[in-house]
Length: 181
Image 1 (cartoon, rainbow, N blue to C red):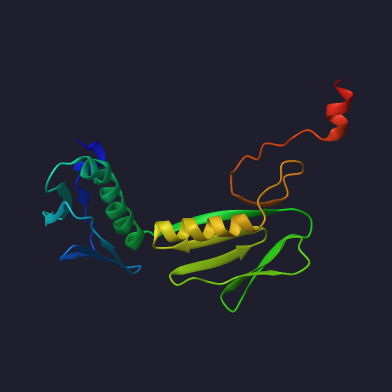
Image 2: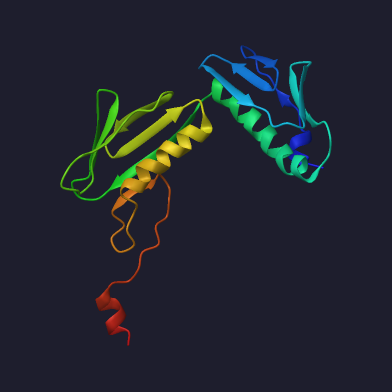
């Protein structure tokens, strides 16, 4: 039995949840999200709580029960508070700016890199910090990972794009290795 899947999800004030066929729609102050529920699960709303239970217990439903509940919880949290990831530019001359709602990165290449703004995602830039925000947790994380992948931090000087608070393990250079022998 799933410990996470058993927990009911509280519906905050100002959030509307409706179920149609096998799809759950959550509407809140920040927007609306929908999730198609896997077959083998039943979603019920009572007493301002969403509860998820399997209709039949199989190996697959046991594996997906907690996941489905977490996805529903993330939808409810997203329409109320939203999600954001912060990325930090590290390197001489590295900068980011917003042009026509798209993100333009100058990160040491011969050309600026343009990141198109996906639907439901917002960019903001403050000095060397890029903030990716939206109501869909998966989409926010995906876009932040794509931006980081443009120039991941390198292990010798630590230059590149990293998450705020991320620790980059630095390697010793040739001189440090040669002198220790």
